[in-house]
Length: 204
Picture 1 (cartoon, rainbow, N blue to C red):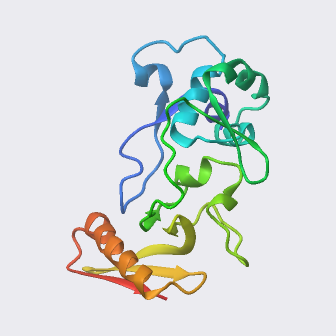
Picture 2 (cartoon, rainbow, N blue to C red; picture 1 turned 180 degrees about the vertical axis):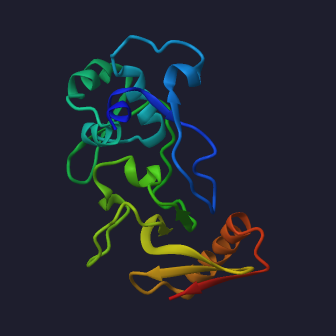
Picture 3 (cartoon, rainbow, N blue to C red; picture 1 turned 60 degrees about the horizontal axis):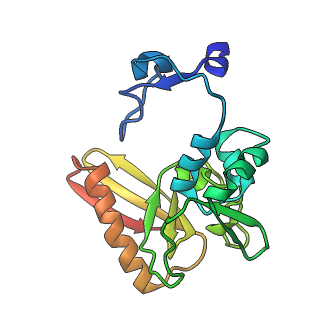
């Protein structure tokens, strides 16, 4: 536990294969990279990489994702090279130059997110995709996005040669959206349960 907390490690394959598990195995970052680690502790490159993936985002978002604290000074140093925005609550958002900004009316097809997906972990404020009343987001759940928002959890149940994608909505899903979700669900089953003889998408 001390090594995992204090030594830079990489979790190596075959851990994390679809449909199976096993003990987590690690090696040192130096061994995995084949070279010594850099000595610079400046977080500028990390911040730019983070924003390229998850921007626009707040400083708090970057801190929550990275586990680092006191990043304001680093953001201020980078400010001349970044774009800034304000969200609906007046919070300042940062992004890299020339990053795409889709039109708000752009359709968002259904997406099945696995447990601990970075879409969930990349921001401190998850209400940007979880605006449902009466539901407390649980990071360990596998979530279904419909029109860009969390509308259900999901899991695949296996029995012999069958696979059932069980979808549990938090609120009613329209017939049109169910059709789109079922189509995406069938593609998910074809990938994650390719060996199943029978596959079914079921709303429960």
